[in-house]
Structure formats: structure tokens, C-alpha cells
Image 1 (tube, rainbow, N blue to C red):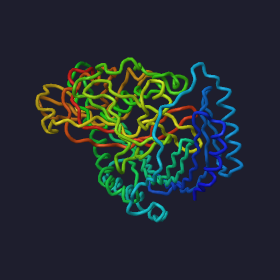
Image 2: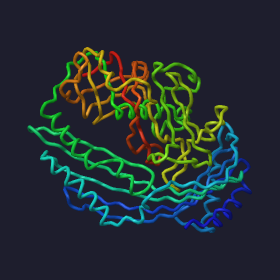
Image 3: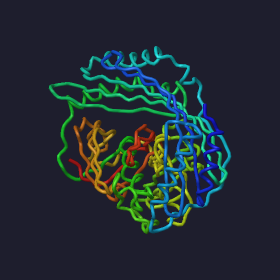
Length: 470
């Protein structure tokens, strides 16, 4: 149970010494983990974690302190520590914040079956059933590993401007690892499914069908797949490839803290600059959106960690750089308002600029016509490996499932097809986008200390003309 009186008392103490802003967040998370390896239970764990944090803003800088002890006395100690940090920062440019409306509200994620009502036996039985379906395929699958995680986080946020926000967010994810062997060779599949809601989330993932299909596909890739001759080809990207490109080569370089330099020593830089706002980076078919307000999504939230309401952010709009991810501090530095992009992994970590659900917007091209006028090309449905440089400019994607395209028809499997391309090169090559967006769950890492964050990536199918493949 979150004790709101503690928050009010600690906030009152912090506000007396914070001319710009003071924030206090109290949080409680209950989580459960069950994993299974080769049909046998590998681990079972559950825990409850309560804690709080204090953040203060002074002209000289920002101070943040957190603790897993949620008492008034500990809160006062956090106030002292945060104030000490802020005073000693001594920034050359005074800290400023965007002006945002105070909010008093509550939000929660709806569900049909509460995660607390699901027994450990039910969780184990579900994973054991998935493993059995994989075994039934007759495909040789080594290292079969499945992990089910679910957690419920309750928060109370308050700041010195008058915001008071209560929230409850249940989330669940399933992570799988399978290694398929055939003809003396192997192919690995590492995938994640996740969402916000209750136990019913698993019904929408249909893993009893998806996982066996994945094993059969990998076996076919090994047995019948052929390597492509290096050269220029037309490429059809599936939603999984479109999604990772949207996240890595559009989302990350559009984070304002990265652009302004805060992330240089933590997670890299960006080839984008503030002055590039309004410039063309891709074709008119390249619209990339981040929307944390999508109900049931893994990256869902109604308000961010600074009390700003979540909304869709149009990063690229028809190929034009349209909007950066902002918290209140980066927004003030660039003369705009926050767009609700401040998130933290838990009460232990300071909120930083993060993505929610990043995806390529749908177009109006029918899926069955996407390959019709391709004489020679490749359809890359999914990836097994990706790499990108610290500026988010040069990148590489290696296929997990891919097929040759010959004279407008999908042909045999293409094995480990590799796309190496720049960010402008990728988004400029798109000339067709289908009308159905498919999402994948993912864990996004950023910050120092590192923070893992629940997000979604996604998109429709994309057609890229004349890109280099090998």
C-alpha cells in the first residue's frame, strides 16, 4: 500500500528549498517469475519491492536520490542528498523547465483476470504446454527455454506545482529461446511477447501456434535456404524489421537528451541536431510515430514520470523530421513543451527521455501486391541480429526468416540475408507501405546506471528499392 501522507510530508520539506521544482514518487511493485528449460521447471521467484525517490531542480542543477525505505525520516534524508547534488552541479547554463499544467488524476490498466489471481501451478502448466507443442513438431530443438514474468506497479507522484497522480499498471511478458538443429547446422530464435493487462494477454499471442510454426520455419531455412549473391536488390521488410528500424534508427536519434549531449558518455550520440527540425530525411512514405497511449501495449502509460499526459509523437512525418522526444528540461532548452517522454525503470532510477511504442505508420498498399512488380529481390520477415553505431547512422540487419522474390513471386528461403545501410538510406528507399501494423514487445536499454524499459516496436510491411544486400 502506498502511503500518500509520506509523500506530502517529504514534498513539503523539499519544496522549501527548491525554487524551480520538487518531485516525490512513492512506488510499490509485486512481481513473479517462472521459467522452464527443456520441459522442466528452471526457476520460480516472487518478490515485493517498495521505495521512494526525491528530485529537486535548482538553477545550479538537478539532484536525485532514492531509497528502498519508504518512511518520512528516510524521505527527509533523500531531500538533503538531492539538494546537495543540485547545489554542487554548478551548471554553466542555469537549469530551466517547460511550463506544464498541474494534474490531479488517477489512471490504471484494465484487465479481466488479475495477475495476482493466477497460481504458480497455472503459470508452470502454461509454459509446459508451450514446450510440449514445440516438441510435437518433430523438429530438433535444443536449449528450449521459456520465461514468464509479470508484475504490478502502483505509484503516487506529487510535485510542488500541485500535480498528484496515482497509477496502477500490471504488465506481463514471455521470453523464449530456441535453437533448431538440422543437417549439422543451427538457427536460433530469441523472441519476446509482452503487454499491459491481465492473464488474458497470453490469449492474443497464440503462442501454442506461433512457436511451433517458428521451429518449422527455422528448420526450412537451414535445409533449403540459399545465400544471396551480394548486390543491389529491392527489399520487402516485414513488421519486425520495420519495427527495429523505427526504434533504433529513428527513435533513439530523436531523443532530445541524446541530441543535446547528455547521453554521450552513457549510450552514445545522435547524427541528428536540433537545427535539422523540418529537414527531409526519408521518402514521403516514411512516417514514424511513438504512441505510449495505445491500450494494452507493453510500453503503455497514461502520464509520464513528470506528470505530463502521454500522446502520440510524430517523429518523421512523410519523411520530414517533425518532433523530438522531450522531457521538461530538454523542452525548455529548445523552446517547446514536453511531450510526455520522461520514464524510469523503477523508483531507484532518475527519469530520463525514453520511448514508448515506436512504429512505422500504415499506408494503403495491399500486402498481396507488394512484391508484384519486383523482378529480383528479397523479403526479410524477421531478424536474428542487428547492429548500429553510437550516432545511430550506420546499421546492419541479418535475417532470421527471408525469401527470394523472383518475377513478382515469393520463392525459396534466403539464408542469413544481410542489409547494411545508413539511416537516411533506409528511410529514403521506401516507396510502398502496407495497411496493417503488427507490434512486437521489446526491452529498451539506456542510461548510466542502465535502465531497461518495456516498449513495443512495430510497423506494416515496407518496400525499399535498390538497397545493398549480401
